[in-house]
Image 1 (cartoon, helix red, strand yellow):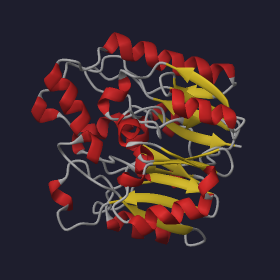
Image 2 (cartoon, rainbow, N blue to C red; image 1 turned 90 degrees about the vertical axis):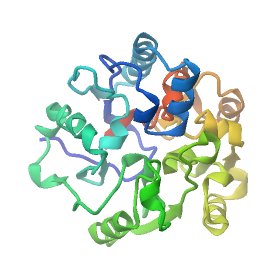
Image 3 (cartoon, helix red, strand yellow; image 1 turned 45 degrees about the horizontal axis):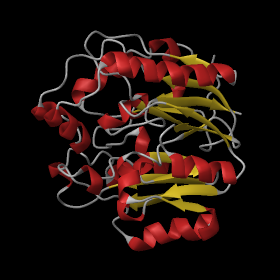
Image 4 (tube, rainbow, N blue to C red; image 1 turned 90 degrees about the horizontal axis):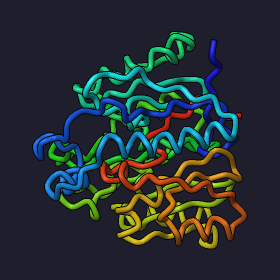
Length: 304
């Protein structure tokens, strides 16, 4: 049986699910877009091709191979976008949570059966129906679990609001020994530069004590400030609205020393190197057009 273990975002990665871009289906219609950035590219005729996205994901897989990480891929479903494995499930400690996602994405979960079959069924948990939560909003960080949420009364009006207040309470009950800290995120169905789809679209820890942050992604300034104070101003790389739009905070850590980043993120990559990180640069700009990047395409199972 597989012993799941995730208590932070950066410990050395041993096993991960990497999504797949094979057979990801036709270009969605504007009505089918799940987020404003995809919509923008659908309307502009610049939506990414399957061939380009497959190439980008292969480059990611090669980096994992280089570092000896065990990589699982979902079973390929015909005409189904399975790139963002972070949405369908996530691991905290030794439990895998099956996310209550948009109903038409339910079969994506079934497609990771190769992994599910290796996990003790008692450690696979389906939250109650009223709990809406996606992995992009969940970040275990040692004694904390950081969760992005939106609790406005207009929650149902936002297709971009993915994690509700019931989810925050649910994770609190599941992990009473942890401090669950929630952050209200800015949501927009129409303007990608004013929309933090998930917490990892405006914040991510790197190394042991550093963080990438975008102030405008947070609705409550005190909550943003809490993160600045927690990591320390000198340890925070603040990204601009345009950099958030390009998904600068959605990099992925293979270890406290190694970060996988998009090759065009020059300002960030230089900063990471200045801080002593090894930066593995790969092309991922086509996948970014769907408002998801490196962290979104991965679901870590075991970190040592």
